[in-house]
Image (cartoon, rainbow, N blue to C red; front, top):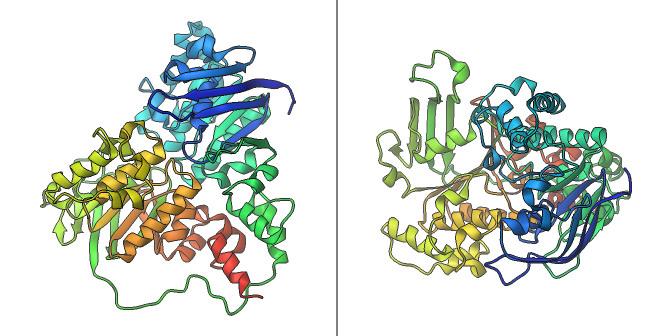
Amino acid sequence: MTERTIAELQSVTFTYPDSQRPALDRLTIDIREGEFLLVVGPSGCGKSTLLRTLNGLVPHFSGGRFSGQVRVAGKDPVAAGPHEMSTLVGLVQQDPESQFVVDTVEDELAFGMENQGIAPAVMRGRVEEVLQQLGIVHLRNRRISALSAGEKQRVAIGSVLTLRPRLLVLDEPTSQLDPRSADEVLSTLRCLNADLGLTVICSEHRLERVVPYADRILYLSDLGARPVLGPPEQVLMGMHYSPPLTQLAKAFDWRPVPTTVEEAEPFRSRLGPLPKAYVAHQTLVGSPAPVVLQVQGLYHSYNSNGTFKDMTSAALKGIDFQARQGELIALMGRNGSGKTTLLKHLVGLITPQMGSVLVHGMDTSRTQLDELIRHVGYVPQDPGSLLFADSVREELEFTRKAHRLPPADTNQWLNQLGLSRLGDRYPRSLSVGERQRAALAAILVAEPDTLLLDEPTRGLDPLEKQTLARFLKAQTASGRTVILVTHDTELAAECAGRIVIMSEGRIVVDAPPAQAMAEAPAFATQVARLFDSGLLTVSDVLEAYAHAD
């Protein structure tokens, strides 16, 4: 990696039009050509704003007040604008689908070059080159809408690579991906970085996934501290939150700090065996709670007339599943395995083509949706689809009215989800993580018996995830049933009582977390893979070895 600087920010300050607080405050950093730079920090600290500054989207498309100087490969993005900067800076946004313009993969890869007036012969050569580089030749003629999330992410990367940028900038590229798809995308980025010398700048909350690939980390804090830029070990050890392996390194004084399970294994062996008196995740067995959700023989296909002669196209293939009152179930599996389809059946958005779904005793195929949502609250992957009022507080008040519930003090729900200071904010101006919590509050205020959450940690920083985990456990303690679709293994280990893993429309694992993660290592936490003894979280490890004293 060369030490040559490819981008510089000098005293950059930027404030959005509807805000009094700067998103970036006198930020001064350098970015080295050919490095893999990981940008981290709590929600709202300015990560996305920084990325959009590099190609001129900030301030050209955002508006707001901008001061300071930016130089990227010798150009000023503020003066040049996003169109001119697109040949230098390729930006892949948080939701890759939001930047797709045409229907097929090959056409999408060519679209940006057409806008730049590149000759057709050159375009064809570049499309072929990018298809090869990203390993997506087989997707050339596929419709983008039919791709998995991981495939869409690679196509989004390819659509900016055809312009041959010198910087590839990605905003939370793994936030919607299962662990294996995330590894595939990150490995692709590392190959582009190492083989082509492409500078990669990546913002991410799921640090355990990305840290092993980073040359340096930029930590932006919203606590008034100045940004920290340096080697991963140095930055991670000084952060307010860190990946599980770094937490273990702090607790047990492991040096150098491991970033992968393989690097941590020698340290783990030095800890010695677990105390015999310690048993992880003990649970008291009592009388089973009543079943509130019951699925039997459920089949569904988006391309079928209901006959299911061709089972290969079915999204759900004979699902049998039940959930009891007060359970917290994590529904996991690869992108496209049928998780969201099952969740939509549980709230009545899809009715069975074959089989049955009973929700609190109601057959979803015979019950009006209005009646079902009195008992079941559903927060989809895109929380913005639930938000349309002028303020967060009004969202909650509207839900109460829509469910014919008496007016209530909404502050308790805002407080539970850390939204007190955002009650009067316009929901669509919030960050992704804040919108996620606002949508959850808007559903919770109707006091449903069951909560269905589809990827609730998308856009949440680690501290917000801890708050969400405590909130979810409190909900089940009060008797609510919670089912969450998640790729977040750490969240599942922290709060789930059961993990259900799906593959190609079928349930392949249904077990307590420790057993499920042992049977499906791809969905195991770093701690579970390192200790292989029923320990799932850093807290488990610290508690276990405290018994050794």
